[in-house]
Length: 99
Image (cartoon, rainbow, N blue to C red):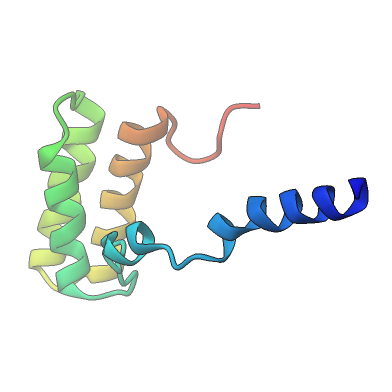
């Protein structure tokens, strides 16, 4: 009898795990970001930097250089500078993380 009750309780406990999850199906999927050497990616990075509330002089300098390079068609160099600016904004370092 005890074995039957424990099996029944275990089966009842698993019912929520087997039920379809409606909440999960309604969640929005995260936006896909394509990281390629394109002018559109350059513009996205520029927008990310400009939307950040706290931008220091180094970030402003890197962002300005990056935007100018992208405008001149030097996409890879522009992206490099804009990504450095974003890295500083997000993590506080320029090249490598502090040890």
